[in-house]
Amino acid sequence: MDLISKTEQILKEVIEKNNFDEEAIVLSVSSKPELGQFQYNGAMAIAKKRGMNPRAIAEQIANGLNEYDVFENINIAGPGFINISFNAACLKEYLSEIIKDMSQNVKKYPSKKVFFDYGGANVAKALHVGHLRTANIGEALKRLTKLVGNEVMSDVHLGDIGRQSGMVIFQLREEHPDWVFFDENYDGEYPTEIGITNADLERIYPLASTRAKEDENIMEEVRKITAELDNGRKGYTKLWDIIRKISIENIKETYNGLNAEFDLWEGETDSYPYIDEMLQVLKDNGCLVESQGALVCDVADESDKAEIPPLVVIKTDGTTLYATRELATILSRMKRFNPDELIYVVDNRQGMYFEQVFRTAYKSNLVSKDVKFTFVGVGTMNGKDGKPFKTRDGGVMKLDSLIGEIKEETSKYVKDNENMDEKEQKDVSDKVAVAALKYADLLPNVEKDYIFDLTKFCSLEGKTGPYILYSAVRMKSLLSKAGDNEYKLNDIYSQTEKDIITKVLEMPIRIDKAYRNKTLSDVTEYIYEIDSLFNKFYAENRILTEDNESKKQSWLFLTKLVYEVNKLLLDVLAILIPDRM
Ligand code: ARG
Image: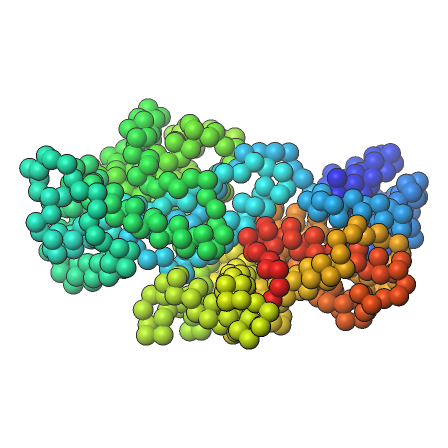
């Protein structure tokens, strides 16, 4: 168990022994480090409840803590803040334990099965920067959720049907009217190849979209095709299957490049087999009413402060829509995987929609009340003008181009490195680029919009991916030069070393905060803080040439300790550390 949780347990024992009742016991980092490493501020609350003097309470707790031989210098400050430090023996024992497996330095939760839905790219449309954040944040939240003890699963939930399908099929029909896919009377074998690449799709979709916007007749045609596809018209379905495959290959490549890994590569259409049953459940529970020809579910509640409109489940023309497939997907996930919680990491502009969906799912008993739904609404990456990020000529910025720009910038870190062959140079600069992008993306709170700044994100200084990687690589190479020994913490020689150790002990608090708030900023900030301390320590000492062997051992121990923290937490962020930079 991590030392913070262990100490909180000790506090709980002491508090109970004294017959005080304080439920949530939280240890925090000391606001006055000269007085102690951590502090407990609960004495004031206990005193208030009982009408007693907080200092007297603090003293009783402090006396109780002194019975345990893990602390030193327990003292009380101000009205009753209890300052706590761990003694050398306790630190040595704990640190030599976690250095072997840093995941022990994390607060653990009873295991639940948590299902993650993120990524959400749309087939036949190029990925844009909006899909970047949900992929990065979703992947990291999933890994964080696993780290604290849960079982996790993920699905990319591709937008693989909808208006864009109608548009692409329309445009292809215009360009190849003789294809058998368009012949309603055709009953032979359909081709499985159509000689179209993803690059073609990048031309076809925007073209069709512009045409449909300019011409209402075309838009009407697109709607008709979309409805026919939804109804299973054979030629269209076969054609769309081919397009789907081409597009998914490309989407996979992009997500691979971002180290986003999905257990399931399902799309909205994978829910089709569950639609009838889902509708039946809604009907049976009185959750489907007719409204202007459509079927809707009323989800408003008396206590609502803002109006929540009904959720449209079936359109007036009888076809399905995003929400239909959403609800059927929920049914499919419940039946196949039975998760305790479903977490959706999606653009925060879909917040109202998900509120409607979750309410419908509960109200209709599609999902029982003890299953938890969580919507993690994600802000967008904006350009310097504060509007969604665009290309230089004002077009929609494609994710691949954005990543390309960053790779170009980070390639300069390795360009003239004679020690690396070309392959390694590319590998390293790609890793630095992904780190730059991810770190910048995960640094602000998830719901906040932020401004894309290539130079800043790629800088070697400040809170950036390259700075973090550079620090981690420095530790890694130091350790490899020193040889792969098991190092020993013999003594602590300086204030910086003490600070590093306190920072390592603080890790469970920060990880826990990130997990509970469903945001990664505490993880990114924390890595920056500990790496900055390490770099200070590195500048203060000549580790490898130190004559005092015992000192050198301790320093290498600390280096490895911080490296292990980096390894674990960068893995949570899905950032890979190169061997050198
Ligand atoms: N394809 C959607 C979009 O691009 C995101 C999907 C999010 N997940 C979900 N279960 N609806 O907006």
